[in-house]
Image 1 (cartoon, one colour):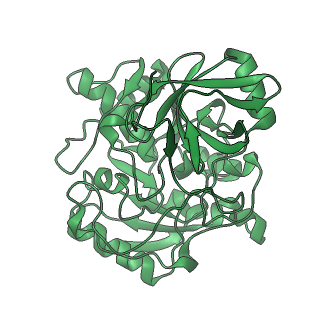
Image 2 (tube, rainbow, N blue to C red; image 1 turned 135 degrees about the vertical axis):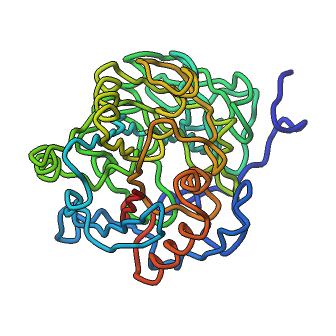
Length: 373
């Protein structure tokens, strides 16, 4: 008998979640991950963005933009559709064109309902997953309907993830999840928005189980305007895994591998920018992770590469490639804040976050944006 995470056959997990609520992202005043003792701030409930801005009568690029100067800590408050005012001709914006997949699947074990959230593709038929529900049995398959089922093949990359082996793979698997799956949704989003609301306009390579949300505010109109101003846009892919496991459990970056691909065209664009003294600005922490992973593996230089990264970027980490960052606003417990501290001092960062709270910036994937430059 092969059992994981408990000596019991039936393993008690999180309380069953109602469909409208989903897994809870807690926002409270407290100490975050790693050395985040300084990150003491509270996100009021009304600042949890629950609705895509374009459904409120505005354009997706009309979210707020807080511009944080890395050296001085000065904050400028603007709007994302005015981004070109902060950039220069020759700057390169590197975006993650990974597309969000419907990674939340409803299944059954006997008479028990379970929700399975995909986290990372391990092989053609195996995924690290988070299993929700009041109880599950490690010996029994999970049935998803239409002849699709999965068995537990072992532990995932870290607790509480489990590895599931599905009886379909490749195109058949993706056909199944696009028919049966839903976007991963947390409790601050009450409405089950369709999958297209969890996409960037340029996302083209399916693979992320959560949206690479730093790029959500870009519209094609803004992209055209930036290009007309001489700002170049380059792409890479990093397929993002789950950002939260529930019950106050957050991924540990070193145990949270993510697949990436950096094409030669993007390497060439970055090299050209660096040679000419221009800036490389990552759109999202996923882009920072991918670029700095490749640089760390090539003595600080870039090369076209594909692989899996478990790089954990903190304030002690040297940044070999990235000069600036466009990102959302992060919770105090999230490791993303550790990555931001590689760009800017704790004093400047947390003063800026208090400023954002005072000015009612919105958090999460449908929220406002932060440019660190």
